[in-house]
Image 1 (tube, rainbow, N blue to C red):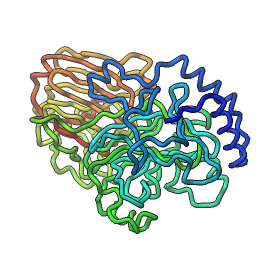
Image 2: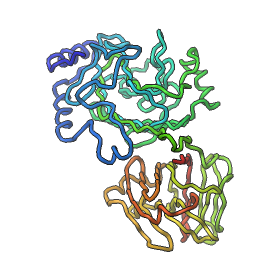
Image 3: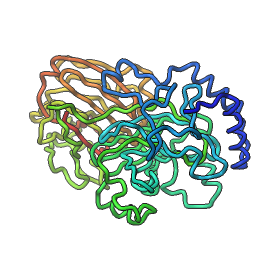
Image 4: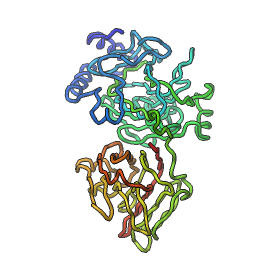
Length: 447
């Protein structure tokens, strides 16, 4: 592969400026990127990431592990590596680009993928998964896409309806529920979680879309989209990761993946939903506080007694990864118990805290026992978005428990008593009255 030097990069940037009619301060942008790269170690795995099973897809110095879509080798033009960035160049105006799309040599089924990207003015690209290399077909014909775009520029052009076409969208099928892109020239972090048929897109720590491949909704959306002519769009269960060359300059770095497939002898069960969105099937109410379903969300609300209350799963879970969303509408003092049992309104087990700001959301508390086992560092409290939807993830394997709030790791604890615990998942409402919390998208994968 040819790795252009700085003069070649400058020429390519100048060509891009003429092609799209946008003035781009290439030297200033390159200087900012170089300064950023100089102060942060990129394209590396931390010891914890290695322990958790993350793999580095781009090492910052070579194209090892990548090749052209429907090609044996990596494109000889259109792509380059500079300052630890994987760069797709702007073309001479062609939407197909100079080098074409690229894919990983390895294929993946269920996984968690993270990547940083920096969009140039009028930039357009995308990250694809479970790519199917069909001779004569484009990559987008069969694979879902995490859209990467200069949103503002394309909205201002007014040449097409941008609904379902903005950064973080599942292109042409699902529109982002938030606006989370950073300004042009700044780095963004994308995340794609694929767990069986369940998929989530994240942008800069915020959930943008979630969907179920093959569901009736999916089938209807595909039939009404540009993908309708392409049989089986998105239905492949395994394939490479792809990055699109759409004829615009985009920079990528820190491309990492954590396969969710289990080793031989382990559980390969997909995540399942613990809440069906319509009723409390699979759960048992403990106490007199209010638990009900409203607008597809599960609501816990203080009742007249203003005492502790619990909603406990009928099933027990030992090693698992649990994800859920919560929204604290009033007070918000609550929690998620795991490996726990409830007798009346007395709980035995461990709680991942859900509380108002400053009260250690994401920490682990042992009720009627040792109390706080670990609290998050104070600066992590900013991960909580009081009054808005938050995403919590809890991973429990043996004696080790790790928690995240909105993609920020809150605590990581090893405790033998927790390892010996047995029980279900329980949602809590605290005593004192005046509390109202909503829950949704409660999903668990047994490990």
